[in-house]
Length: 405
Image (cartoon, rainbow, N blue to C red; front, side):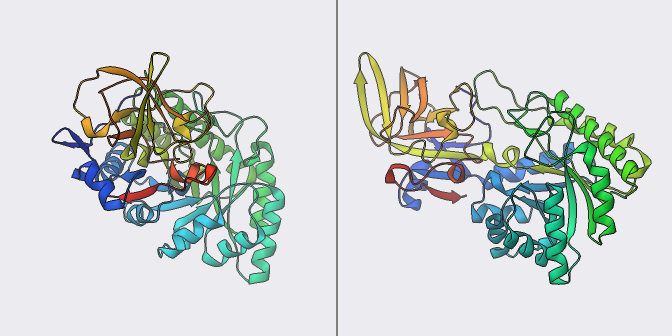
């Protein structure tokens, strides 16, 4: 399985996120399954990132990674802004008092009501097509407001080693780089409050060299597009793509190397970008490793020489860990018996969920301490793309509880 993230407390042999033993957390929440997010780990991670990155670089949190309201409220005091991908995500931020000026809105297929609400709130719309630009401008005209618009660029390169590639080739995301200069000129001429560009080439890369190369290529591309269009670039969102190690043999991303590479690329940037504000957009890297999913062992059974630990959770809460969220090859997420955290491994067991499908496997052939019913299993790297990215209604078992500590 993958490496258990460092930073979690252990009390009397029991895992203790936030310094609270897991049995106490489950009791406090009213039962398992339970997602727990450790706020101190998130704050430490953000501080380490800021220390590694060039001065003046803005940090945005991608809400899609984890939209749990207490976590969003906590993040509001640590990051410079937010990036959203739906009207629902904006409403979640709005309910917490986040100002629209701190928000960027990307994603294809924005509805008319979403465009109107974003324009009224002063959100920067990251335009994904010429048609969307026209719709946003028309919506602004109806409201008597100049819409804040940036262009999301589909670059002519990909983020090498990305787990999910979102740039290069034919994509549903962004506007092909060669079509951008003309559209940028048109948007400015039509009276938009022009904001600049957004490039997101891919996600979940653990290769610092690939990220450095992608960021440098992005800066060069944006400078070239600005020169061709004859427009300034108030803001350039560099995307993110920072990965975390989920599986066996994977190592943590070297953020110091990324920061050094980005600083060098910014130092040599073209003059047209001299006044540009650069933004780093991250979700998974900020919160994934600070989250743990706790499920209770309901049954321990043997079948033809193999041991199965059946828990009260499953893929309906933690789809990615089951290998059914874009994985080509399923890999075991980091896993432990949380109530016997410092006990040695004494058996090989499969951890399976409570759903009536063979897809509901959370861990295959794991070396674990002996566990019995009522023990708690911990699945790590659960702070991103967990509860909100899983089919909680599947088979009617209901959603997991969530808690920020």
